[in-house]
Length: 237
Image (spheres, one colour):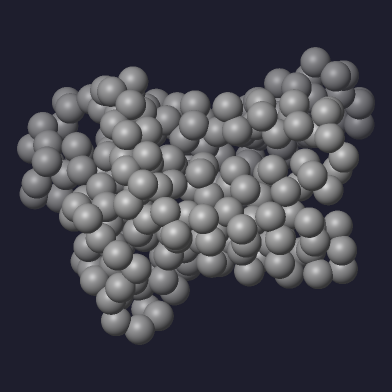
């Protein structure tokens, strides 16, 4: 066991981008279908069906996430039983894992919120304090979610590691596991902010929904790259 292994963050981001490009090129029809669905969901985002469509679109992204994990960890893959599993079990398990990670991260965010509220009492927080609180909440959420997220790539292999294994696997690499997805999301957020200023709200929604699959592929590629490195360094886990 190499408990001192450190994920090379910049190299891992580079490899993740290369894998993401490979996934798009190998599955052009699939990625085009997700982009087209994103356009439809974006155009209808402000309608009465907007919320439902976004939920359905998010759920439909699970096969894309599993496909990306499979490409990185197993090589050329397809949206078949080897990737998605026999029946809905693997996709449902992936969804449940994602929900549990989000739930744990959400609960952890309450700690700094309640702590600062208790310290400030009835006094209102200034804009500076609000910013500090927001940054603190985002940091806590990212840290709590980072190591358990290593369980997600293992889903595609048909034998997911336990939560405790995922936590131990990420030991010593929390910073890299936090910064990787964060640095992937920054360009997406910048593009979305620029688009919101330049175009009508409906078109901005379309851009956001079209960018979502790209962010999913990049993030899942990064998690898979990190998982692969850590499993090789700690084969007994």
